[in-house]
Length: 435
Image (cartoon, rainbow, N blue to C red; front, top):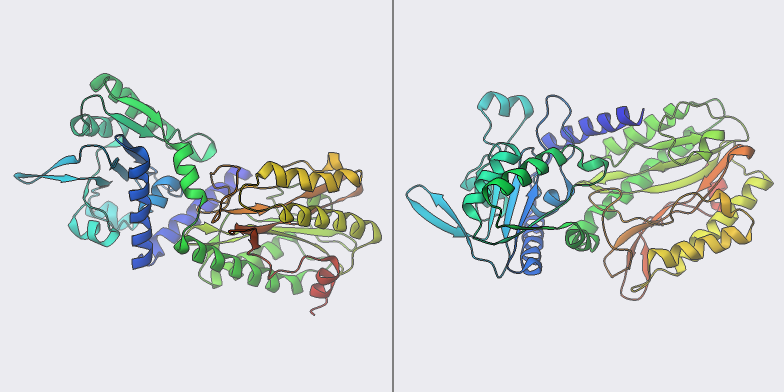
């Protein structure tokens, strides 16, 4: 089921690509600044970023590092960046040679294929100007083709930095990466290969003004979608209906689902990743709503737990208040220099003191950004955006509770970006009454 949900989300993201608006001047400038920052960080090395390959029907969403640096959603793209202390990249331009510090390789698709898949970017000067990159060239075919291209461009003994593309989101890229490394091992064994994940993860964790604006809008739409769904919650309604309301509300505002939503009631609320959304809401149940809109791929991630009939039972309220106190304790720890571990311990102390520690079965925090689980270090810095989401899952009692907000680290503490959505128990009950 999770595989089907991921495939459906990929289809939605492909559609979003084809309907995306032109990048703003601010977005182009921000991406240029990110590439300059990367070049300064890698010194005399060269960075290579791979894009998702084109598949027959299901197009995976663009790999986050490439998207972060270029804004390119289309498949079969590569990026080569020369470090600030490296020699410029020499590229043929007709009979002349140009020396640049970045080259974006794009698929030069036949007209029929470009029309079929809605591909709009051509490897030419017009695209380079539109995206704010120095040079756009036709992409070589796959990892082996890229290896041959790089073999002619990189100086002797150069250092080359390349992400690992580990984890489930890198499945489609790992074969290409292996082809690239195998080809370079044959043709350029003098190159020194280093990983790039930690550096780019650190860069991506600190959001610039363009990113924060997109995330704030995504959270506004998320709050609006939750407000639209609340009046539909009552005994006898299907989880699927509430799911549909949330999806429709997000799409009606021009955003996209950031991930497969969780709409879990009763025993399903005790399953943190209940993606099936196939149950029926019943009187006395709790309903966990874990959802988020995505704007320009920047993902909101908010969870609220509400009583189906509008009122918590005494036991439900008791546990709810424990989870809320745990979340507030963690939020109080959020400041520059604190770590995810500090916040996690603060939340767990509250839950453990209530004798519920063994029912808190996941981490308290994760970064959010272009990916709903964005990469990044665990030590907080100003500009980082992340979630705080303690939960208690009492399967034997037929309910679970999770409360999740998105925060941004400020110079002295942190701001809760999702504060427009109620979360105190009394406020939740008032929300359910339409107050």
